Structure formats: structure tokens, C-alpha cells
Image (cartoon, rainbow, N blue to C red; front, top):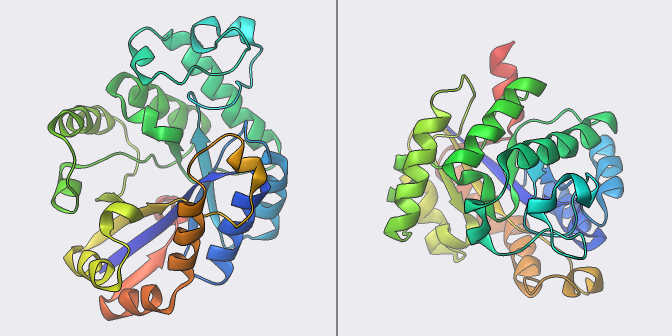
Length: 271
């Protein structure tokens, strides 16, 4: 049996993204999302999640956008002079791992104390997929009883083309994730990589084998000035919302015999 988690990243980043996520769930095929504890509209997202129990909601761990939850003086290796997260990804080599773990713990705690029961962990810009950081994410998942994490399996690469360096990093991360008793999708693919035409989407879904897979996307809404002020990824988000709500996406799932599920399925399997 083939099952597919359709996850929206960046829930809580802005009100426009929140609207896109909820619309893609209510009108489209979206089943799951991950919430940014430091997002500009995180509290609104928590309220929307509470009002939408059919939507699975995890935590979107953040190190490369906006500001930390902890005071900047508690995480000096992670922030710039303005107290914002540094955006240079190479800094993963010099970030203090103890500070990262403390900040991610604070992000998870903020959302859990607001009433969220996270289904899984992933991260903004996939930063948790660095091997050492995936270890931290897995440790925190165990600490808080979160049953699943996003990790990129070797099998994912038959569904997408990525540079060799990224393949090697992902493979090393996968081996680290395998050391933890946590659930992971069999494959993970981005909507933009799977393809956004009817033919490409249908082809992607036909390639999926038995098991639980993840397709992640970045929905949004038109006229999101809040987002435009902090990101160049704006129009693309609107397009992805329309794709997720399209009849051809629903038809492709049915034709391929795929059951849409959320990350909640991993928690249900443990009961």
C-alpha cells in the first residue's frame, strides 16, 4: 500500500503563508505542516492548528532566518550584531552545538506550551540534515516524545536529481538517523523537484513504491507584503498553493492508488 504525506513547510512565518497552508489543506491535498516557533505569525498558526485537527502539525526548526527564541546573549555563535540568525550556511562548521540544542529545545517548548503536540521535526532550509545537526534533532525528538523526523533516504535519489555533495551529506545523515528509534518516510521529495506539470506529478506518483513517503511544498497567498519584506520566494508559493488545490493533483493520487496521510500516522503506529 502506498501512502503519501503532503507537508507544507514554514507555517507561522507570515499570515499569508498561514492562509495558504490552511487553504491547501481544506481545498486541496495538503495533510501536514511544520510550524516555525519564531515566525512572524506563529501564534496565529497555533490557533489555526487548534481549529484544524485534521491537519498534522510538526516543528520547523530554525537557525537561518529571523531571530532566536532564546536571548541573543545565550546563543552568540548563532546570531549577528542585530540579534538575528546568521544566514551563511557554511557557519554550520563553527556554530556551537550546545547553543543549537538549547535554541531548538526552546523552539519546541514554545509550541508545546502553546498546546501543540508535534507530529515530527524538520527544519528551515533543511539545516537539520547536516549530520551533526540531525543527531541533535533526533535527540530532541526522543526527549519530547516526538515520533518522527524528516531524513533523506538513499531511495529518495531515484526520484530527484541533486549534486553529489548533497547526496553524500544526506547519506551520512541517514545513517545517523537510523541509530535512533524514530520513524522516517521511505522517500522525501520537494514538489518543485517532483515536477509541477500534470505529467510530471503523475510520473512521480507512479514511481512511488509501497510504504510511507513525503512530498513537501511551500504554499502561500497573493499580496503577502510581510513575506516580501523578508524573502524572495513569494510568487512561487502562490503557484504551489494552486497546484496543491488542483483537480489534477487529486486525480494523480487516486490514479496511482495513493492514500494521503499526515505524519500523525507514525504516532498511530506506536499505539
